[in-house]
Image (tube, rainbow, N blue to C red; front, side):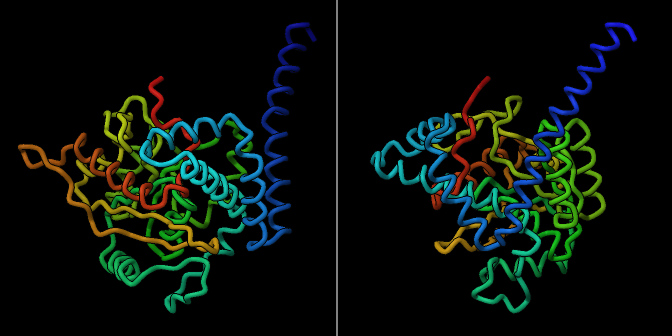
Length: 310
């Protein structure tokens, strides 16, 4: 073996270890959470995140974002919103391995269930099941943001869900194992995603995606009082397929349970030719998300650099 070949093999071993070790840690973490159970694990996660989150650089990002979005509020109010955001993030992380168990929404809609819906949302889900797709559904990083995708799969709707894969391939496989079987078809974000999602709409599927993250190549919208680059994928698909667009969100209740809401189809802006106006529709969707955040500011993922330009 030459020196060059030895170095190449060493690099390959290092690369495999670099991917494998974090995946083993994630598997071990999820295994520990399963031992804690679906009720205790989120409470533990919330306590840990509330304690350690403010010590991280991400807390400075969250604090700056909250201050810019709510300049009229007091420092104490903004600090409490940040604390709530860490609490929620800890719960979401520790609910991951229990999503299949925690989903307990039934036709009876028990008031003590972990997932609840109001009468309007129950009627809208029934309408979706009866009429079918194609339908586009947008969601945001509020409360447990995996819940709208879980709902589509568990309610028997043919669904395709866009998701962003972690950079670590081994960790991505672990996360995918948790999601598979709960959320319908999972479509990784990437160059082929628009085509795959359009084909799913052509088949009459419900296509869902999170729309509140930064997208540097997208149109600039006003979001919580500041300009931000937004993702136009969903409006582009709606322009191409011309199907209803709805919003879905989860709201975390004071006891940690979740209420799921589905909107009526939104009226999308049109251009002079009557076709959907992508930029205006992107703004419309972001206005809805901003309204959700203002209703429950402590349940949004403020740690994301939503307004970063580069």
